[in-house]
Length: 292
Image 1 (cartoon, rainbow, N blue to C red):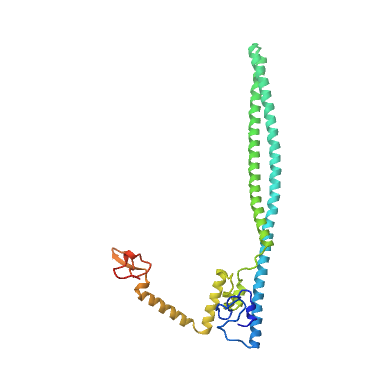
Image 2 (image 1 turned 180 degrees about the vertical axis):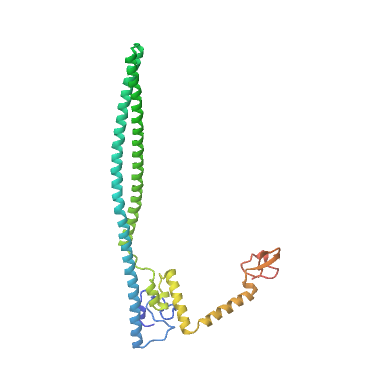
């Protein structure tokens, strides 16, 4: 294996040309033919290009983390303003509730006063005019007290609603703050190894990409699609499909490779019967003398 090709940081233990395990880190691949100086220079340039592609992946991932942190922090600012508005609404509601409560206490005190005056008028057997006046004053005071009581109840409900709205905004703000802090911490310490990007998976050699330790499911899917296209270009796609069909037919023909059989027992219902020759079938279902 050419020393320049071994410079790729993700292929120190495996050959990037054939995939064979190297005798040791940095040693030459025994399965690959030795390259001349010109070809070795080409491999060195390509290995450097793969390293550049992976560096771009790392830089883009770090920038994506920075962008995510900025978006998370941007969500906090408007909610902070909403919390301030909600807190101001609570202060106003508390003041209104206290004023309403004070008016209600004053109305109750006035009602008690005129009630005692009416009771004295009845006790002293006051004249009709004085008794009528005392009665009308007591009834009017009672109506006013009820009206003020309802206003106080409404003021209390408004204050409770303001408290709930403020608490909801504070809870939302706490969640957004936690998310923003987590995003900022992730952006401050981006990972050294990141999944292979779409561009790297498509531009680099499939073998080089498959040797990446952090390829990921999406990268493998992209490499598989690239290999399928290469098979078409090489004219071996039909051969590969034919081999797959032959292997599938052989599996169907080999009774020992089928874990179960589907048999119609009658009545329109299909039944699944375990294959006694399959290794996954429990031992008690194997016929005597037949063990996988």
